[in-house]
Length: 281
Image (tube, rainbow, N blue to C red; front, side, top):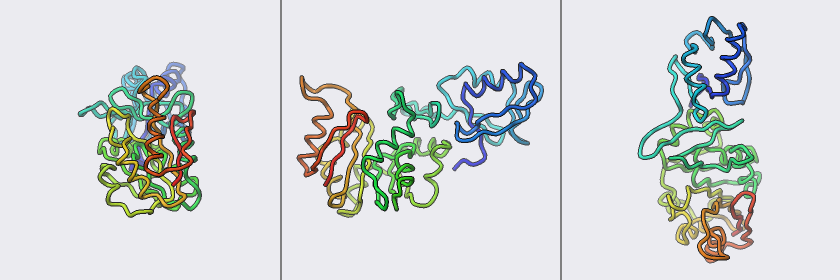
């Protein structure tokens, strides 16, 4: 978990460059992606953060030229929060919490709303105070964090990708995950859920990758497992998106709703604004 680092976006770097150009001696900034603000010293073409962390003009100009990147500075080392592996993973700045992007695909609802808020709205559809919650595809942990804020007594958050888990550790908006109340599990939910006890959760947040990447998490077999581990009268929120129409008059989200009903869920309701479905056992 990151506690002693500093986060910079192109916008933050431009603010510092402007202050340097004006010859100012101090500047008030957020260096944790708009969670808090602090005052820092400015020298000759340099931003002084602490004894070992400084940014010179060249570094600031480098950051300012990368609008879709977040840079992290710790121990005097400046690196973009991205990983190029089988795909291209990166944290992308917003006006508040960053979003996760994988090979150009945004993994959050972010149009007109910041990702933390959209995850919070999804979570509020299913989670009540005192609930034990399963977060099937944890990502950056925004849903799990919100579940705790809503009063969940316990959250089990499952994430398969070690790359996503590593980026999450460097995200200041994800740090609530590393406190009490949340169990972080690195596993494939499709396998892990089969080991969970029947009727062991009061609420489930199911926000899988898009269908083309994880079709099995939208299928009847997996939905039966969701139904099995949920307690009677427990509630599910399932983010589906709506990537394409399967046929005229029948959308992807409608087909998902039909499969949920087939495995036993009732009160299956589409929530168009969140591109998802609520359902009750």
